[in-house]
Length: 242
Image: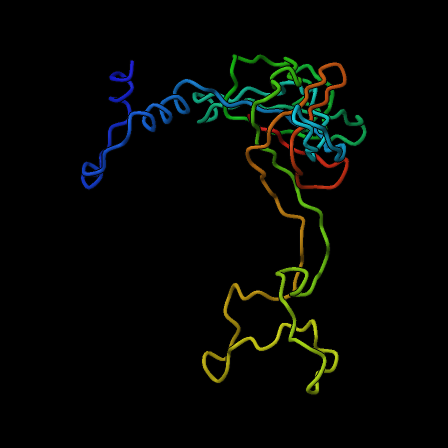
C-alpha cells in the first residue's frame, strides 16, 4: 500500500531529491490528502464552563451550539470550478431576506438562513436539503474553531500591543506613562514606516484556534463541549472544522 502512495508524492523540484522523507511522514501526508475528508459545521458560542477529567483535573472548556445545519448548495468542478458544500444555519425572517437569497433558498427547498458557509469536502456525499448535526463529531477527537474576536474599539499601544509604558512617574514624567514614545523617524525618512505598532482599532478579527479536543457531545441538545477558549462573544457565530 505504501509503494502505491509513494508514486503520488513525487517531487518535481530537483534540489528536493537530496532530502529523504521518512515513511511515517509520507504516509501521513497521503492519508490527509487522499483518504481523510474534512468536514465541519456552523454554530454559536454559548459560553465557558469547566469539567473534571478522570484524574480530577479541572479543564476549562467552551460550550458550542453546533447546528443543525442544512445543505443549501452543492458546488461542482464542472459548474463552479471547485467542489464544496454550502451549509446554512440559524433561521431568518422572510421579510429580512433579500430577493436573490429567497430564490437561492427556494431552489434548495429550505427556509431562509442567517449564516452561510462553504466546506470543501465532507466524509460522505451530500444532497440539497440534507441535515448536518453534531453527530459528525466524536468525543476525544480534535477540531479547529474559527470565530470573530471581540471588538474593543480604538485602543492605545499598551492594551493593543502590550507596551510597558515609559517607566516611573519621576524625572519630569507627566501624563505620559501610557504613551508610545518615540517612533524613530527623523529627517530621514521623515515618515512613519508601514506596520509600526501604534494605537488603533482592536479586535473584530477572524481568529482560528486549532487542536481543541471534543470533551462532550450532546446530540439531543445540539451541543458540543471543547477544551479551552474560542474567539468571540456569547451568541456569536463560529465555524467548527474537523
